[in-house]
Image (cartoon, rainbow, N blue to C red; front, side):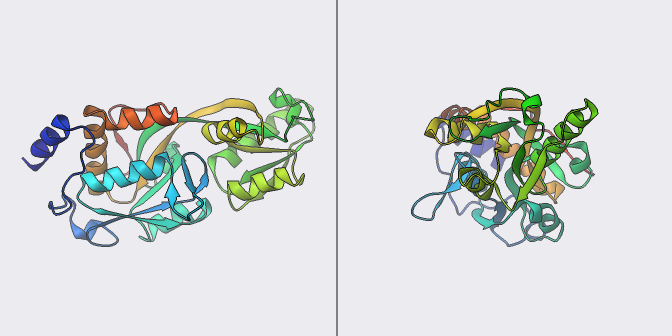
Length: 271
């Protein structure tokens, strides 16, 4: 009944802020902190997640997390941390949700509950002016390329390097960094010749006039929200469905040029 009422309110007034004194539908035992949705993020991916000049978290995924928390009658709280620590931290109950656009893989879905919500892919950014004329993946042979440690992007880059070696070409010299911001700083300083990130981030740097996005759409794979708790995942899936039904999610994704990956917001993970 509570869900029907909330859905009716949302349908009448799209995007309305739901009352924060409504009872949360998730048992406190399923949360790291009662009454709070604790989410991990690495805010180094503009425009999806970043820190503005005032030190505040901003971006599409931050807005998404805030709205999910609101609709579940919880207070949003963020833990800023490098991606490499996120999956171990989820298992150790340091946070409830990985909200960093983690790429979906079957291997990851065997470890945690995953809801695919955003289409994404890997991209390559070159130095300003693209002085090495990188146009194809073959052009990365023998180049020094930076990437964030431990993510899908690094895995994709290593697969690309292996394919080049199998074709008789030089391997990519891969340099890993704690996060994407540091990787792009290394590109600016000439310490690497390209950076592997995701399409939206590479497009943002390109539009700013910083680094051209020379390759994109590589290894297209949905991004997901990840949770340890199945009951929490079920409630998050419900919230996403309501956000789609009343238009809030479509408006958000349109503003950021993002496509919805799975309109059913089904859960993949251990039972």
